[in-house]
Length: 85
Image 1 (cartoon, rainbow, N blue to C red):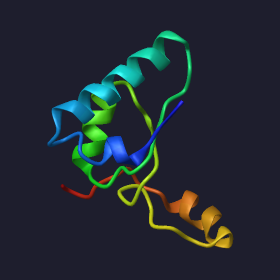
Image 2 (image 1 turned 60 degrees about the vertical axis):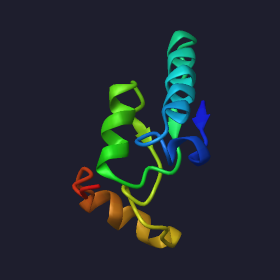
Image 3 (image 1 turned 30 degrees about the vertical axis):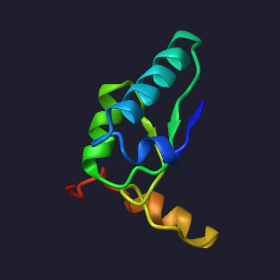
């Protein structure tokens, strides 16, 4: 189940968006579905999502957009998110 960036973006400052993401994550977990969060822009977002059980992330905190031919090199040298909020 994919959680749209329009909800993820403000989970650190908007309790309603946080509640929506938490509800979607809880429902997906109950159904045994993988959860993907879009729009992860900071370490704070990644930590909050991990607390909610979301561990597949997409966003600039993980990687900038890149051409397909650069992906294998990126994977080989990837280090966990280190960027602060």
